[in-house]
Length: 479
Image (tube, rainbow, N blue to C red; front, side, top):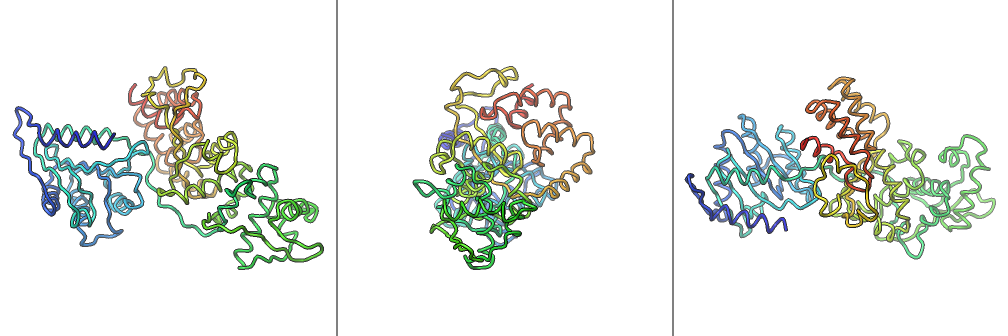
């Protein structure tokens, strides 16, 4: 639908002449686009606004046409022209180099929200020139493909396009490249193989220590490149958080892994054990920081299990580290109850391991301040789209405190403390980007107003989609 509407917009701009304004329209075919767009950017005096589905460039400047146009934007910024660029989030891995180069040049660069695909390719220069059509900024589009665009010099039509670009909903978070961390490679089949995945059996029988021990032993086996491991009761028990009675505390989890689940082979009185792996074409990687930063003991059992599920989903996703799945589908694929999923996601969100975007019900519109915390009707959110997730890198408590202190040093203790409390109210005490956004809101609207709106938003049910920082921003802007 968004693509159809944008096509209608292009047609209306190209073929409508507004009374009272002179209008010059040129059709750009093939290489005409590169030359005309480059000249327009180089001649810009005041502003350049751009929405582009794809900018495929290298990490450093090259002689590729897309890279040359990107450098023209950066040069415009350097000579005092305001430049704003919006890129599509669904292919952010391709757009990432452009995002970083623009960001490093001090340009206001954003990605759109996950609500819709930004398929537009439009530029507005000095509030009078519009360039829009099928061209992405890539070598194939600019050199090889059959592409065309319209170059329109008309202030009123430029204003119309600029308003459209300005109304594109932006993501609150910058793009993150998927991590490729060092860690334990574990077969996905342990989570998904029917009729009962082996790790699911551990989860449903509340065998948390057996689960922890298996992951630790699998990591040890991988590091030593052998599935045969010498038994060290003190080492294994300490890895599970026990400080004494090593043999006694280790007996039950070892016994379960051997006799009940068949994940370990261990003969009586043997000083060695053998780890049993199931075959799988795909693997997840549990980062070493899971153990290094103490998440193996800090997280609840459901949160640990859900972390593995998130790693699996992100690894499969074309938009890694973003992934998309309904609770119903997660429950069916990974055999975990929807209630356990909800509780575990809430915990991972609080630790800033998962970033969750909960969509509002379809057709709900934007509620007023009084509606934002109204009582909910049974089944009211049944038509709400599935959640969107982003898997964040694991962060130690020391790293978080160091980054938080940087915000205290930059903005002052009072406003940073208030922003931190507001973020905690929405279950995001460790999301530094959200805390910094709250600091900006407090500066713009005043603490009392932000606090009151935040409290109203926090009274919503989390699953509703209305209990979110984006809702706070919408209500503040509409007040």
